[in-house]
Length: 409
Image (cartoon, rainbow, N blue to C red):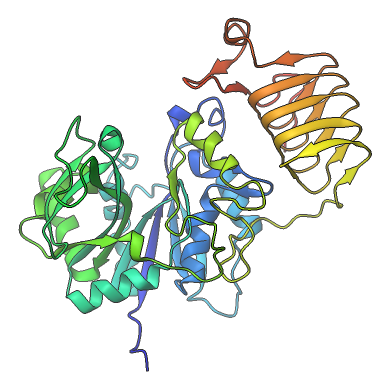
């Protein structure tokens, strides 16, 4: 018989400005950016927590948060008969002054009273901008069985990517001996040449340890877990590097990457993650009945296809494809694609119309656009850069409402 699981309170860091995802973050924060046919990026961490039976969740928000607040209000309402089950948005409360959140640790420190109200045994502090599935209870079980004060979810990443992550130095028993936030270079893992052990930005704290360390951080002016607190306590607390590659969730296909995890903080990473979900044997299958990624309610009618050619594409609800050609295209809700339009490796967001004969290649078209008939986007970097943002890998991003009047929602 499984022993009683400890009470867990979760804080989701949902305040990211997302400057590297511009212009998709021109009027929304990073966790609110749409993903696939009907999700937003924040849905992945919330689904993982709910599927792991963690039902007390605070989202700490800050920048351009209205779209995220509306999404949570519409999609993540818990039963009113269980007051201990909730997903609640918390902006900066200014309890200790008039400042905004100065970092991840400061965000939690400004809300210490919530921990005091709930009195959990453990506190999960998770990021909100990653695409993955994770059974958090497996991390909790290891945290408890090892007697850890803090656990950091980790996975190996190529050395060339270490400047984008917190890098963990751990001994053979996975106790953390050092932590460096986004170093320019680092030594390889002893047992895996060419790779460093990276933090996923998901932390689990014993509540009393977290409270003590946040009081200490406030006294010394420390504001961030990755930059300040974790490097300081790596040698004094029992900090465990949890191995995400051992985590298993039910319902995965044999063709899926069992420890798929992507930080979608750049246009190129965001674009590539979408196409990891396509096809009969995707690396990450969005449909998993045993570990679902929950999405917002969808009142749209079923999609309609009136001729054309469609290859390895996703057509969302309410879409109408009228004699168009789609190759590796992702259409979110209520997108219309007219006769002879060609979409090749594209993401087209809600309420957009692609006119007759338009040709769009390797592009992201944000919502509420009306692409004119015969328009050409992608395939000519000089021409595209004169009008749009173009990523390092050549992905063209058409901002929301660039073509045609902007709608409220």
